[in-house]
Length: 234
Image (tube, rainbow, N blue to C red):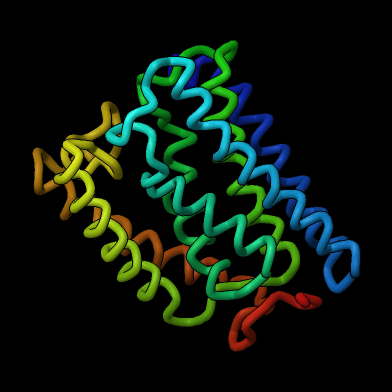
């Protein structure tokens, strides 16, 4: 699928509509009992889309440990977002917020060159899981959650720890999860040169982006300065 071609733009527009609707529902359902079924339904969508990945991989003969494990940062962001939607725990939301807005957004704007056309099930699965994760973040923002002060620093350290663990798996399997061994084509990492410099450059940009997102989250206030769950959470 051509980046920013008609099919890609149409999928981005559909995803944006879904995110806006999720945020609006979050605002309308804040503090209401109906919030739990709706937020958990979003979690089900994320889990279903993630569960479809090995099925699609099997269809293409790519169901191998080196290619089909859910270890990309977007996979982790989607899983954490599903847990945040289910529990509405602030610590989970914070990680979903930074990983989602900081990583999943880029993955939607610059999908891998291996993504086929819009008529392919793998393309729909890819965009559904990414868009649903972002919709979950915006839904929880609509419900009043906000990252706490210092959360960007914690998210950066957790991301580095996660990358170190995934790097060990890459080494053991000869894989390239989180693009730690080779850069994806046509990404922002091209600005930072070859391995391992693009990893250092990407880490610096990620830390700055997380901090910017923390500052942005303070605009308009909201929950999150001290509590452990969203308003109305069980």
